[in-house]
Image 1 (cartoon, rainbow, N blue to C red):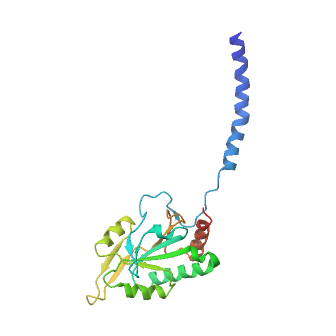
Image 2: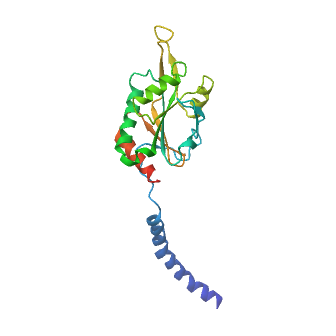
Length: 207
């Protein structure tokens, strides 16, 4: 009796699985939240560049926690940079304006790789050229290599004709944090303000 019952049950269970398993899988796919389609490189879950503890142009110590509720865009550069740095900051200022009322939820942060020449006064004037709400952070000579290593950025002093006319080669790109202070994206220099704007809008929506 048991053998007959067992033999009859197998085909029934087989057909149930054959019919409902694909439907159940389809249901899971349909109900799963869409993954954000970012234009920038997705760094969600990265175990580096999680925070910083540096003084800004006003002498106030800053960390990523200070900007809760805002999307934070971090760029490494120096004030005597002839092209990449001012272009990046100009683009970011333009993006903030394009966000309209949400512009107040975007925080630009410039971290100097030239603390020797980038004094607080110079950094304050430099930020004023782009947006007065943007902050410039000035690591000490000891802090700079530590923060550069943590953010995986490259910088190298290139000697000039005089001791003070040197330049600096450095990584060019933006680290982008969501409104909860989590590192989410890396935006390459030259990839265009349109894509960066779209990514910031997605993060402001909590994606």
